[in-house]
Image (tube, rainbow, N blue to C red; front, side, top):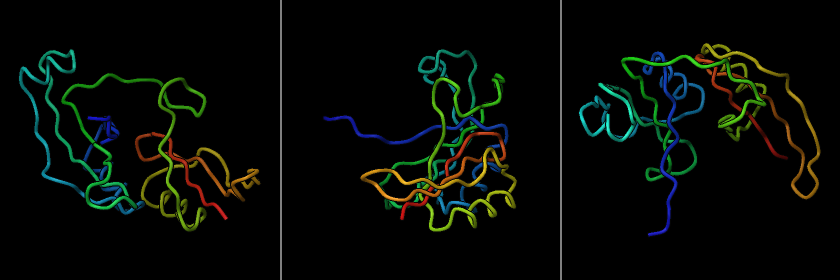
Length: 149
């Protein structure tokens, strides 16, 4: 079987609050049942000891009922990391194509997110006009809001 992309995982401080943010701002929808997972299989697969997590998969908008999900999980015990910046090594951000960058940014801010940059525009040769801004969800994860004309 060829590889098939399934989900991106976000480890949250408060999974319910973070999931509600993605539902409210981006129209993600819960998929399947809430998860309450633990046991030897989780310890073995994650390389952790005594791991226990709770959370929910959210269908990402625009891909239908079988599309990829955002997996928002909260472990009982977590390890802090540095505050994400756009140039930090590793996974950088989640990008959402939106109808109105400014309106979506306003909704994001009202729902507990924060600004990272300011709205900018550029012409990308061969692609078109891009209106874009980077922001943060309520837990500091970086999001890109983009619109192409």
